[in-house]
Image 1 (cartoon, one colour):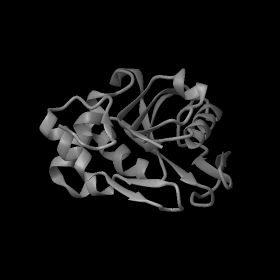
Image 2 (spheres, helix red, strand yellow):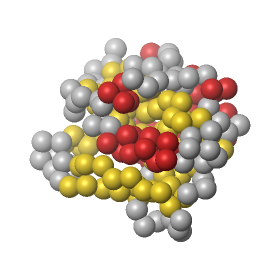
Image 3 (tube, helix red, strand yellow):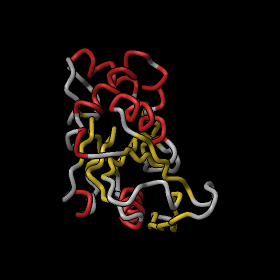
Image 4 (cartoon, helix red, strand yellow):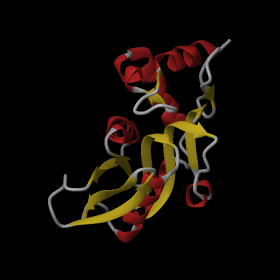
Length: 192
């Protein structure tokens, strides 16, 4: 029996595998500021069994069949860590969506709101072939600002978002309609 506030959503594994996976997700209260519980999935990557569960879980929980997208786009930085091996497993290419100022020009950029200001992400202008269907991956969906900005970049490239794949989803926060109306999956949920 799992005794954590982390709940399985789209992770189709045994109870033992699920418990081990959940136990590897770190929770740090008061970080980065009081009132926030930081959820760290990096220990999952350091544990061979949990990492195998993660990659198999992401593949099995794809929000659309693999033949309905052409490339995977990972959001900086943890989306890189799961996006590249997932792309390799599925025989797809990988595109990095980076924080502003990290890619050589020409780039496309999109800004989004944070609780303490704004942030900007970028993609190389020719990184995605027009007409491509893209699966966006990241470790966490909370307010959805980064995912929405990624969708804007992909569409500005002449491509479309086929779906969104997340490891963790915060509950108690409204996910934007543009994400909810898209195909999306998350392996586990936890309160914000």
